[in-house]
Amino acid sequence: MFIQRFGTWIKRGAGVFHPTDLASCIRAFDGGIDAINAASGVHAVDTETVDTWTDQTLNADGTQTTNGDRPVMDSGSMNGSDSLIWDGSNTYMDLGSGSIISATGDFNLFFLVDADETNTTINAIFSQYIKVANNGAYLIQTRNTGSVSRYTITLESDGTQGDVNMNLDLNSPPYGPIIVEFYRSGNTFGGDLNEGGTTGSNVDAGTRSILQTGNALGVRTNSGTGYLDTPITGQWGGSIGAFFAFDARLIGTDHSDVVTYLKNTYIP
View 1 (tube, rainbow, N blue to C red):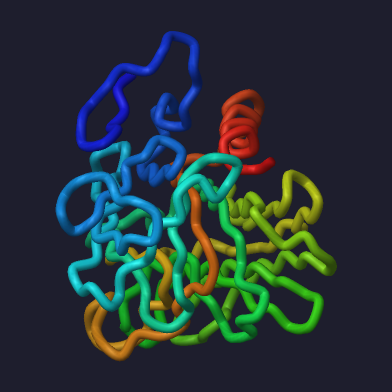
View 2 (cartoon, one colour):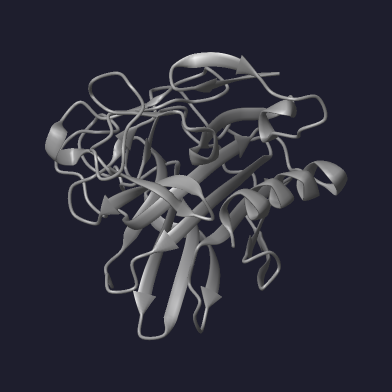
């Protein structure tokens, strides 16, 4: 298995697990393997703005061409691994057109995040969206109100915002860095925070179909006819160390291997 480090593909040691080893992995953004580049095209250094986050599956990198909208490198901030700081007002990354979450199939999403607890607005971590009567959007976001840090996955269907919601609450610190997981299995949503610290009960999602459209990290893309038409809102405030997407619901060893990788790489 090869990974990209400092713009060069190198071979990992035998027996060293990485989530991209799983055939169902369709996106892999991982600060733990140094695939974060500045506008110069070389590996970003601490406090430098970042224009490219390499997708280890080679499907679509995360990019930001506008300097003022780029997240900032935070070297070694999560257990020695790199992360990106998002300012909660301007920063986001385009993850490309197409679809990360399938129209009707199962999925599993994992994020390694550390929320800015001073930001009490809606903060979108990830969105897959097209503006067609609020139809077919998954939004993952956090709203910090008082001592509660809430993570929500929302399906907007048939023109109704928040038609299906799955909420997970952290009621006391520490609020991060934590693993945030959401999945769909059949017709149900499920989720988990902090390695089982908060587990959401399954929510019936029915047979709703998700539109195949564009994706973004660190922003709620909810205006216009395109997925990043202006104005865009709900920028994430805090840090993101990793984002892994799978086009299947992970169970057993596959699931535990991904969680263990994230824990060992990012959480002290």
